Image (tube, rainbow, N blue to C red; front, side, top):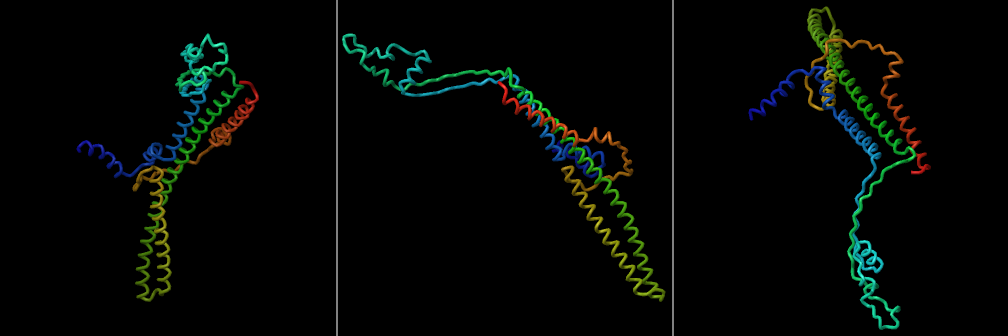
Length: 296
């Protein structure tokens, strides 16, 4: 029991502390379900690539035939193949040299044999020597599919990192807005109290009080909307990190303005890289189809 408590205690302490952005990003990489699925796709594509490369080593098949028949041709063939034939199987049991019409005798053992079992085991090894570039095309396709899976995983990870960062900075903006709006709400409440006193003294009218109360109600409505947005943002972070998030440590710095050239976008864009891999796949598929007209 003590060991279990010691294992659970760090987790409880971590849950009690506000979750920082860096901690959230580490949890995202380890626990996000979509990122996990992308990693499994990479593993699956890797197995397909290994299977395509394994075709170069050929194929070894074990064939086991088991038969039972009383057909005359099958039984005679089974015995010859198994090297079990005897002179009796050729009808010598019915051979009578005194019979002048010996050639017309129909041997019973040869025409009506008993049931015969036949077992045959074979090992067949086939090695591809020339396939008209079919195997190499399939290997290139599998390689590009694995590359696309890697790019998909990186794309998904960057997307989720962006969404997590955006959620943290949105939360910081919401907290700052709520702080200012609560201060405004408190000021309007004091103004409302002052207006009531001024009405009593005759320095203000009831319509002035209604206008102040209208402004106060409008601020209360905005505060309620922002609090609902804040709660929704916590639910979204819980979905991204695949665990319950109830308190975070908002960043106290501004994101720098990115300066990226068009050349960097074209060279590093993941969608463009995936499109190039897809183009290579199409080219290899054409080569694989053309290999159907070549000898193997």
